[in-house]
Length: 509
Image (cartoon, rainbow, N blue to C red; front, side, top):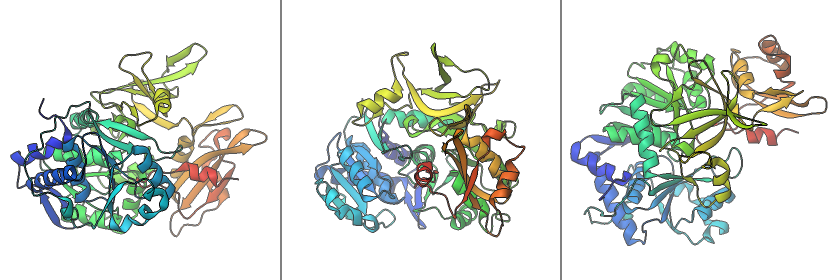
């Protein structure tokens, strides 16, 4: 087998559509021929610098052509790409670099400061600082050699280590093979009719799984064009949708909220958009209706890094009928919803919450250098295929459609009753003056735990605790109602836009 790896994709695309723009950043196009030439030259340069098969190459930088090129170059060599969260504190960065065992770190100059900390320099990692320049920033590392790299790559070979966001503790390194990503893309293309004329707007961070594996890779496989934006800016995003005729968009809830709140959202020409994808957390129905009013159904899916990430999809045809659902399992993936009782694990009944388990060729083989965490999350004892325990709670309806209820760890028990914060948050979001909210359980002497709501009020609105609680009264059972409301100017999010509830819990006395 000469090459079945993802590193070959640039070569295969370049021979089909060499002059087509693969990437555009800062109005500078990179054709498929350019991308393949750059990745191959960089692969030779990395090899000359000592990178070998299995070596980890870390990348610390904003979304860029350099990042995409470095990823494909590493893959050509059989190396392992480690995209690093740009918002990590220095101790977190030291942990990721040290735990991954990276032999080379490519770091954007604007983010290089923390790498000079003694905790990081002590790791002895070969570090190259570059200036982002629409693909030219790594020119100094490229070789003049353009000959094809002949390293044989199989689908089971390790392609990437993606570190989890750390919302539930210290980040773990999720191992993703070439096959994991390939099957994830296959799943997506079964569900979504992407074409070679696709123009995808990539504004979510590429160091997280959704923007990379759900948007960039499928677009490149199909021969479309990806607009690479270093950061998400809702005003600029709307301008690009109009001027570049963007057809594919991905975002998490906070991004779609920001776009809907942008000044020109109501009158902007969004007619080119065919697909708006979302994941990471359920989108409030009020926000879905806001986008429906603009003629666009946000296609929600459910996934996680450990599944590369696609697990379920709500197809557009069911979007209105099953509004708020996460859909059904993707084509090459199997999903179960289970509960634990005295007799052990069992399938849940319709409407009964249970943990989501996932199996399929897109599921990670485990966590890098963490046998205990792998054994806890990946169950191979009951089925030779293995089942990933996601830690997410869902209910199934009579047709088998899943609705994600909450994180298993986010559920709290008040007076003996299970309370799922996502349900309370959905009710809060229906208030027209609430821009964003979160609910966590806090200790209570009488009830064990009660809810505390954290609320961000829309600009110009006037809302107090009494008004929030009055809005919920009658919409939810009494035991589900938060006992207190805390108003904040903004909620904490990680770099992918996910809400970080752990920070809210830490701030709760």
